[in-house]
Figure 1: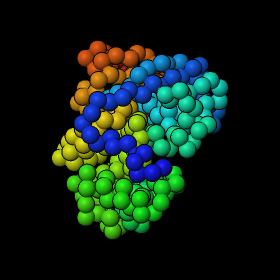
Figure 2 (figure 1 turned 90 degrees about the horizontal axis):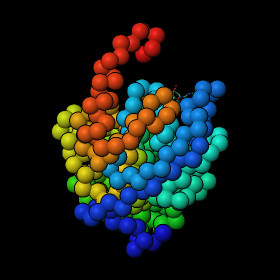
Figure 3 (figure 1 turned 90 degrees about the vertical axis):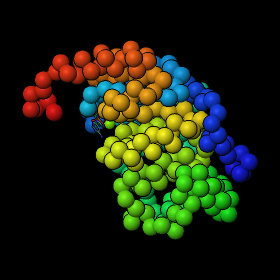
Length: 251
Ligand SMILES: Nc1ncnc2c1ncn2[C@@H]1O[C@H](COP(=O)(O)OP(=O)(O)OP(=O)(O)O)[C@@H](O)[C@H]1O
Ligand SMILES: [Mg+2]
């Protein structure tokens, strides 16, 4: 990849939607059926993923990212299979985990940011220039030599977001990426995301954050219960959740 090929997703341009297609997808993990014939065909731009604990949101995102392969059926993102074409998937799809420790591997911020770029064939100098550009865009130009372990939790979340965006993906997947952050940190990360011209799917339990999306996908017990706008889905979702009283062994 050359510098000129890395798209600049920070321009306040229209989002190009990503087409997510699940065809009869089944997935079992350790004998537990997670999906059994799930089909879905949606264009996502700023899309929230909603559903109870254990509904299947994380595994859905992992299938979209190609981090897990369905036992049967097909998953495609803009027509390609992300589990089969890993190189394309890691360039075109960014993933931000709930726990930033899961996404961070290196001692310094610069190493963290350049690793993925170099793995995609970018030269050292070019990768470092791209890393500096990203740090500047996110308002932390002095970070290259910061030790990752010395960053606060919110700063680690920001670093994970920058690492996911470094290759210039067209689709960003966020799995409860900003849970547990204080209000100013969460608000500023959301503001950064809202300025990106990158299609996004964000799993969340935060109803206010979910309401900011253009569309929602409601996952329920391994099925897509419905898709629609936040106005259509959130009142029904809230009613369904508030109507449940859980026995202790159902938590
Ligand atoms: N590694 C695993 N091995 C076995 N079963 C798993 C594994 N990971 C997830 N599951 C099961 O898959 C189902 C979907 O889990 P998933 O993590 O996708 O739920 P979720 O909607 O992300 O929940 P949460 O809101 O709690 O994050 C659950 O029944 C869960 O128990
Ligand atoms: Mg989850």
